Length: 173
Image 1 (tube, rainbow, N blue to C red):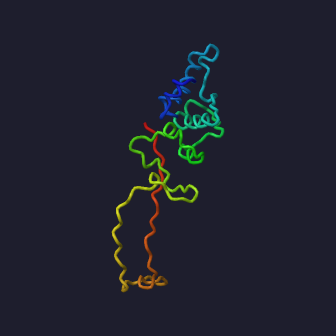
Image 2: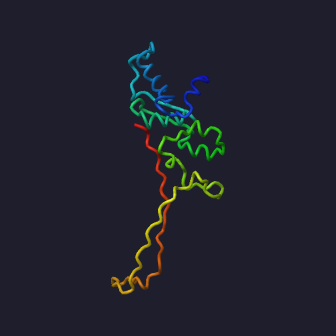
Image 3: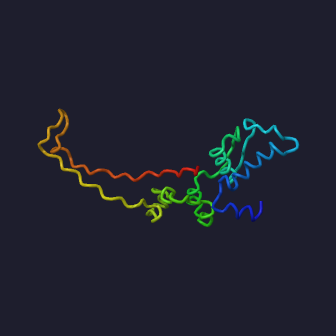
């Protein structure tokens, strides 16, 4: 495709204004301009196929514009851009492949990934939360239901703090 095309996709991979738009423009061109196929390209009979980055583009096309294709095959395409970086161990292209939408920086971080059993990096740690108010201690004179321990007999329990779940970013509408 050339340097100009590649440079134009930096930070925009998989978006309609970049490479995904080029794929869809090709499908439209086949239906409107191709000498033999003009007017015959029906979405129900059109498929998309790709491996590696083409597999990623196949998945993006089916996720964002499924009405163009009746079938799709994604071979060994990466499906999670952050895992591509972590599994490969090469962060060289991360800024080009993984553009974090403004305002969603935290959502893009992997909160609970351990690399080699190590600590979470500062970027992977959740933001600090305000401490919860201490719970009122149970009164030892409260009545317990039959068959249950009274609060005075129950072992002390501290509330378990679960990490905030990771939520994927929503595509821009």
